[in-house]
Image (tube, rainbow, N blue to C red; front, top):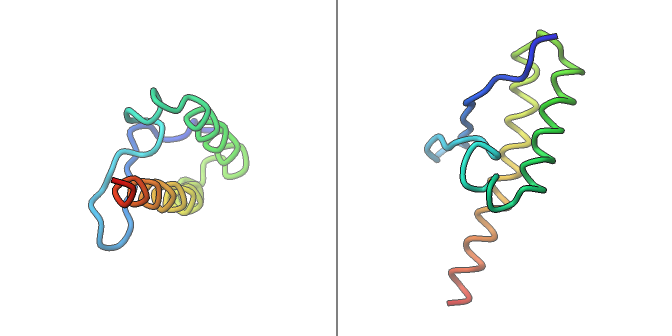
Length: 81
């Protein structure tokens, strides 16, 4: 079984590519979230093995959820100011 890819980026339609969660300052600021993301990547690697296409497709959907939550959190912070 191959390890998960490193240095991956994610993007949603209409957005620019961003570092995948856990690969940026977020991992330092939210170690529990970074650890959960690492567990997800390991579990996906176990399920999909060498099928990088399937691994990436599922991981991209997870990253979309993470980005949507981050955008909501950011918008709520801006609205509170």
